[in-house]
Length: 356
Ligand code: GZL
Image (cartoon, rainbow, N blue to C red; front, top):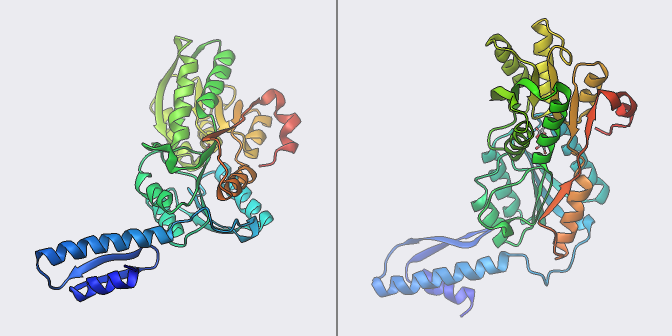
């Protein structure tokens, strides 16, 4: 029985189906019918929905598209830091260079906005989705929808925690644990393994915040006289980083160093240290992660002591992954972006070559 026949049967028995542009026949309102009729119609409705869904998923027999014909949805976290802005610029410019039709959504750092954006991309039946997930958890339902529709999801810059990692195609990101470890090892060498440290954490629940903390703690665990005495989120922003550092300074207690999960919070902390009449980089050491240009400028001024580069220029790798995924090629589950530490000894030599 074809779809019309099935629909006729259901309608004649008093069930009204609704056609939904992206999911097909869904929902029905019972108007009349005895028990057996209902069973028959429920089965028919289910069959119809399965047929509809089947006709909506991407199948491998579709003609392969080249980049100029691709429509890609990009759900970006927001514009909370210089790093984030550089990543957005890299992805937008790469889409333009390849002639990809990019649907961009800025979530203002709210996961619910990212989930809504992904739902809209799926409804538009985009060829692929690029997602920078603000936090690690809560993605299963919407990633399942994309997976059912055969839409590849490329994760950039942060990972997710899901029960089945088939729900995303690949992750392109730095090793945040290694970044935290590099920062901790550098500070241990600088202080001779003895320091009271205050920590400015990134967004709660975000992969870089969780793992940069883990890596830094692994590094200082080797030095019993290195302690994190205060730790609080600065939400990866300069303003909040400054505010939290002001509170740390007011709350008393010896502070030998600040470990900030990103440069923007470190630069905010440097402002707070100066306003408290102390010399950042001398009285209080400042170490952070990202490697944005303002961090290099601060190192040249002798205020920031070191930063671990976390490359945000992910556009080329992201669209290589999109094109390979759309062409049905198998991709590695994880591509690790290589990072490097810079300090005041090298900042002046490299600052002019910085790309972000
Ligand atoms: C790291 C990225 C982080 C940066 C911050 O991949 O997710 O988010 O370190 C940004 O600057 O806000």
